[in-house]
Length: 351
Image 1 (cartoon, helix red, strand yellow):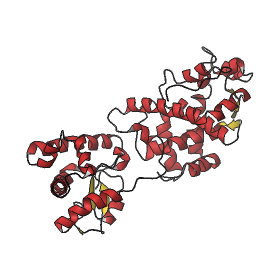
Image 2 (cartoon, rainbow, N blue to C red):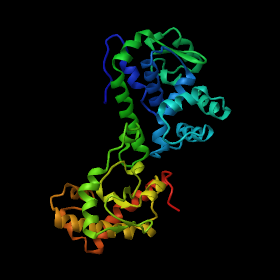
Image 3 (tube, rainbow, N blue to C red):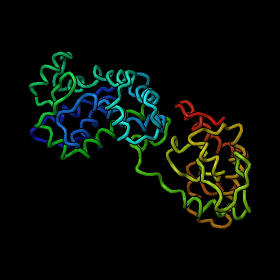
Image 4 (spheres, rainbow, N blue to C red):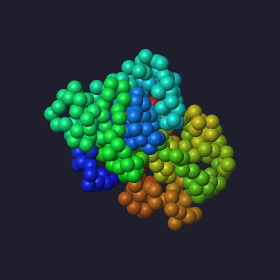
């Protein structure tokens, strides 16, 4: 969504200009928070609620996917700190995070929230009042000069009624505009991190891996009459294993078969989003993948999961040979950088 819906009575160009020359994520999350509050029926909104909404909106991206917001951005640090201050889990629901922050009496949490009062509420209105300082932005906004979208007060904002219907009628499109611009901003900060757009909003549910189990790994395990878990050495049989992401899903954000292997159920739960040390596990991982490809190619050469390997190898012939050290090196060359980048972004290694 590259453009906002137009309205002949409102300066939509100024709303779009809010994201020009952006050095932090604050404005994206600020506008998203205003839209969400208006959708809940409010036109007079406390700043504390909006700052809390900013934290809750960024929560999953920071804590679950470990996406970097950049060194200058305090929102990422606030999310990480508040998680500890309030003893919240990384997968806490947006509603529970918002409720906790709105009602918190923790001074450290309040300090983190209040930091944004000098960063975004008034500067967001700069396109309506170019060159004005904070005091004048507050003053002019309260008369809704230049049809600015809200009036600034010490502890709250009051949404301009001239904008309310526009925000409500176009809420979905405005959110898309924010997320599209936020994705571009975050991709620039994380050039090697895959699938940034799908790491901004917590998905309603994770895709099931039952097809990968039935149509790929069950076939392999049946043919081999069981396999040993590369982590625990426990013998695994059909119906008694978990499908495990070698590189955590939280980082790769996909279910391609080249990153999936059977694992001990109890270990899979304990591993969570930890990274596998390559010197300890890569050889066993590759060996299992190599056997799997050979078996599937011989039994079901048209198996659609073989196509997943085309993101690593140049063609089916290269996939099905897997004999030379060059091919193994290519597999490693695909996985090692992902592990390194994930580690740099805060993912921890298995002990």
